[in-house]
Length: 236
Ligand SMILES: [Fe+2]
Image (cartoon, rainbow, N blue to C red; front, side, top):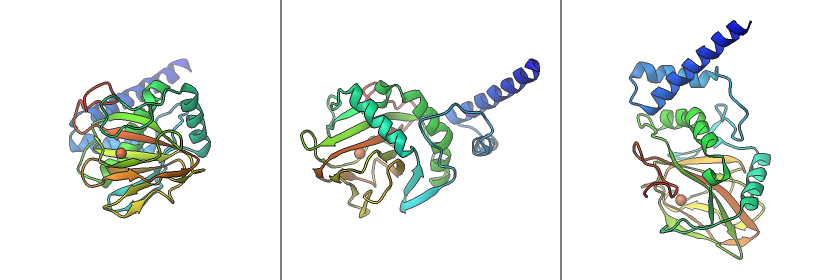
């Protein structure tokens, strides 16, 4: 019995290694198709995660803007509580658009987040924006807006190939994420859903002024080329 189990585990590890290799390199077409099959069929066991797979539920917010499942409402509440307990909300040194942020790396969620993107978000992105390829996640942080601290964020683009943005709560007024070029806002996007958009050129965005309450959101930036690592651990 143990031998059979060991064989199954070895097979799973080998499958994961193949998937990992093809995720990180310039795989041939056959390998890429195999990778998608492996990921889509969800054959490999996975430890419980704080992040929720999209299960094929993909909405279109606008041209080149997708909405996917990312976290449950309870998970969003937990992340807010963990971030507030951790405290130390501060802008990154030298940030042209300073905001009150805490890195997911500091909160201990970095590895899980990277794994979730590789397994569940890359296939969605790479299929929708084919033939572009993902190179990794370069930064992820929880942001906080409050009446006493930061209330808004000026229009800017991100140092990110494809950005993911998750609304963690909605018991506040104002502070909408607005894309002026597209005439789109996240006002009606549900808590826990993730908006995916090309962050660096076409989808400049801003946070309008907070009028009431406290707003929390999760922002995730992806690498623009191999080795593009940020979050204060590399260069912007
Ligand atoms: Fe941004």
